[in-house]
Image (cartoon, rainbow, N blue to C red; front, top):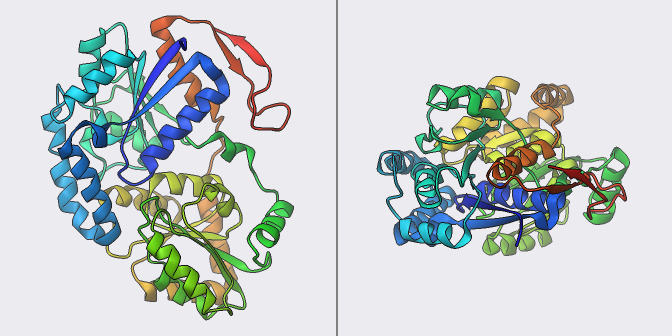
Length: 412
C-alpha cells in the first residue's frame, strides 16, 4: 500500500476541473512514484442523481445557450447554504469513499466540492487524521466567483493569481492559509517545449501547414462547444496569409462537418482534430487562440505565450467573466461577440501588423515563470503531516531527457 493516500474531488462541468485533477495525479506519480496514491473521484456525477443532472445541464447550457447560465449560476450558489456544515446531496456515496479509502488529504479542484465535504471528512476520519485543501482556478474575483469555493475551515487554499487570492481572503479565507500557484498542467507540458525551429518543423511536417502564415487556433472545451464555422468565414478572405488549427473536443458531429468543409475549401489551409492531447503543442504553433474563458485553456495560453481572443458568442458565463475581466484589465485582450466582430478584428490585424504586435506585447506582460513542482510538494507535504512517512522525491525534469523519472533524492 502507498505511504500516502490523496483523494481528489472533481466534476466534469467543462474540462478544466478534470484537467487539473489529472495533472495533479500525473505529477504525484512523476515525483513520488508508488509512495503516493491519488484517487480521483467524479464526485458530483457519481454521488447523486441531482448532482449528475446539474452537471449535464451545465454542459448543455455551455454548448447551446451561455446566456442562460446566469440564472443557473445563481441557483447553484444556494449550495453554499445547503452545504454549510454537511453534504446535502450524495453524502452516502462520499461517506463510503472516505471509509473505504481513508485518505490523508482531501483535495478539491471544484467549487461545489468544498463546503460540507471537508467537515464530513474530518467527522468521519478524525480531525487529526486528514487534511483538506482547495485549488481554485479563477483568475479574478467578483460576480462569477462562487461562494462554494470558500470554506473557511480549509487547511490550505491555492489561488491562480494574486487578484483571485485577495478576493478569497476578503470572502473568508485566512491569509495564512492562502497561497498563489498559477499553473497546474501535465508534466509533459513542461517537457514538450518547441523552439522556433521546432515550431516550423511541427507546423510543416506534423500539421501540413505553412510556417510563414499567421496561424489561428480555434479551440473548444472537452464538451465541444464552438462557433468554428462562423469564425472560419472571417479567416477565408485572408487565405493567402492565414491558416487555422481547429479542434472539436468530443463533438463528433462538428468534427465530421469540418472534415467535409475542408474538402470543399481547398484554398484555405487548416489542420482539424477531434479531442486532442497535444493542445499545448498547438498553442506553441499558433499566433493567437480563439476560446471561451475556460481557466485551464487561458492559463496554458499565457504559459505558452499565445494571445487570446475571447469568444463571447451567445454571451459570457459568470465564471468566464472572471477570466475575461483579468485579461481585459491586465492586457487589453480582445473579445468578439459575433462573426462580424471577429472578421473585423482579423481584417485590422492583417492590414496593420503592429496592432497584433501590441496585443501580444501586452499579453506577455501578464506571464510569469513558476516551478511546477512547488504546488505538488506542498500538497503532498500536507498529507505527510498526518503520516510522517519517509518519501523519495524523483528529479524533474528527468536527467535523461525522457518522461521517465531519474534517480530519486531522499526527502522526508
